[in-house]
Length: 388
Image (cartoon, rainbow, N blue to C red; front, side, top):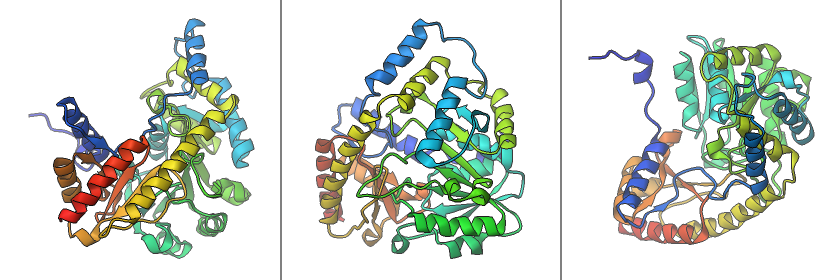
């Protein structure tokens, strides 16, 4: 018998990937499955981005590259952070990673020591606490609910901070709730972070997907003191429909970025070289394709919210960003796993149980799919809830 490291037993497999795999297996058997599970845009990567990668291939960009990323891409990211987010980073403040998830993992491994506490508002993206555990840290989960738009308050943040607190994880727009923090809310959190002298990582992967006049505010843009305590995690997967390309980045103080580079140098080394040239084109070319996808998501959001809002026995609030509906199923009396399993078996619709996000009385529906699938899936949801 092989004895595995204890850390493996502390981290469960990804529920989202498991449900997506089950749904795909059912589809392969010829079953008419509607999947609202995976957080992946259904659009193809824009042609000009693919063309740039093809051109890089033809130009021989197939060799090892700098561990921290191609200099041209790092410079483009720095310009983007300055123009879009008012963040004064230089290329040396940036590391290109194998997806946004990898940027967060590198950060945790570079920063967190045994016993360090990391504050994570719930509902949370399911990998945040598991990454903290893998780094031998302690996730400190702070519960939020619909009354505050599933957003942590400055009072909650302040109360959660202890002498062992090292990092606060901020995600806006949020996965799984789609909520976006306002400038005033971000400012209030920044004041606590500066006053208590902790660090914050701002996961901004959904920043381009916002609605109804909502504004994305990078917390590090609010002043030098908070900037010095901020790390930015982001990537190309959601806004540019480049999920399979695996290109993300981390921006922050030089010493931490160098540490992340050391870790990356002994794990994955550089991100796929020619793919990085596609990312350069994504940033430096027209953003028309990003807006086109955002408008399509906005239409789907309107449709799915109106349909869900008409179903008795469940409830949800309208999200400001991303492409998720976070639905409260508490009135059904079922746990999120029971609900999701039965829904998939009885009505052939795949959704993600809220327990994966620290909210067992909710499910997450992704509307990053076509309108016909959305309408069919919600019609089946209405039937399912009515049968309980």
